[in-house]
Length: 333
Ligand SMILES: [Zn+2]
Image (cartoon, rainbow, N blue to C red; front, side):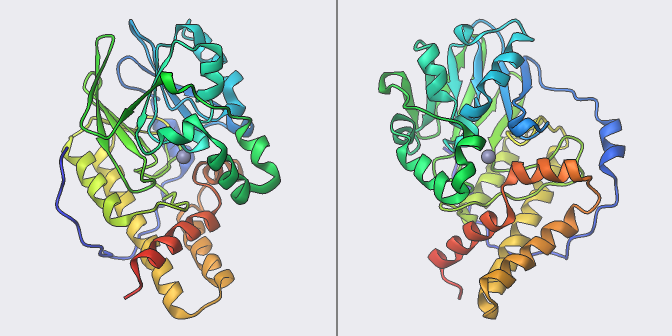
């Protein structure tokens, strides 16, 4: 495992409003993807471009982040387009165990118990017993939890292979390297795919619609760790990948731009929340300030695109709460 030097938090120049329209960039987007990797749109709540599952083809077909339980039929339909069914899948590779990424794992294993599940050792207990995960999701989303994420179920212990980062996984002819990657969650791995030169980054490089001109942070409670996150971003850069493959959404080849843009916005949001907490403003006012910032970054998107982006990142108050929790642990001074 690499352990890059700690990077101090600093905020650079104010963000420039990006004037390139989504439609323009969408027209330019060729929807290319890395070799042997297919992007399956799970169509969460009927929206395109919210949660991607990556299907790795070859001798031992694999899924990276199968998505939530609620969209399993859509995942199957996406696999069928590539001539695959759940019975063909040999591995599930998990970036982290949040329900939008790995909620379908239990239901898939109930259909195909032969699958091996590769997951961070800190996340594995929550796949084996998802009750805490479901409880905290219910606290965040209330009545719509099941509509959003469906009904997950336990993953059999014997199916699980735990990792801590530093391992190399050989799947068919493909080599995947796992790295411990705190930031968005403490049980987060990133996976470097030597075959395609891409990195499955989960939520550690933010969210972004295909063709969108910038990134958005997703910083929900409880594990946000900005220092760890900056080290993870350094690590991703040091791998010199040709592709970033965030779960939300799709493969991006403008790696340097994406990483730099995300780092800057993450630091900006983090500082904004710190300043709000120090100001003595009410929580309502602080959330409104972060919402204004988020809105100012995306005011060129259509309503449908905004709806998809909000599903990708979660509501802004969730990101506010995650950053607040970070500052409470760290201290404001
Ligand atoms: Zn996510």
